[in-house]
Length: 192
Image 1 (cartoon, rainbow, N blue to C red):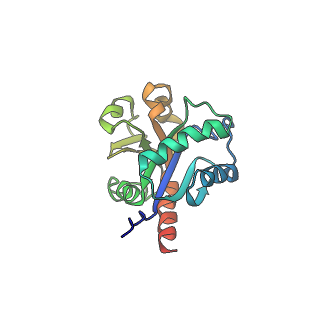
Image 2: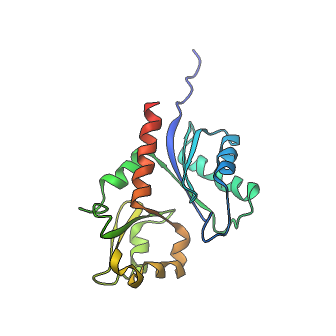
Image 3: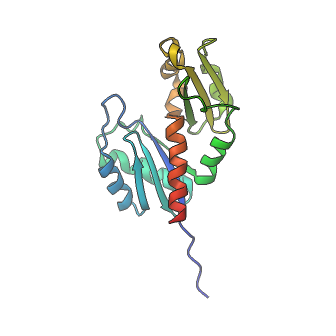
């Protein structure tokens, strides 16, 4: 009897450090081609901020390592800034399912973000957040920090202060609408 090939599984890949503030530009068509050349299948990107859905029979650690190695070789990037987080569809579903009550449900009133953590946990990073009362709220999650800012007061938000901390190198931020859209994309891929 021959060994059965492991089935490809859907993964969400969040890439930190590309297409930020006009620097470290990576065209999405080029990123898709790079990932396909690495052997990943059904590669699709979502907006130009490092969001990828792909299928692979490899585990998350191997996918991450291969992408982190290939990106600086394929594009002009600062490999100190590049970090890759690979989530299964179920892990992304858990981020959405375990959100604080009401989080992301009033987009006309609040800017809501999922701050994904790469290689550190929420207990390590919570101290760097200094939310402004009445403007910001943050909640720890499993591999994520949920951040919400009152839209009418967002210029008074203290969220941007995390960018000056050493811990920021281990975070990648996605709006709540992007986070939920990525889950929708994995659902569509699963039904194909």
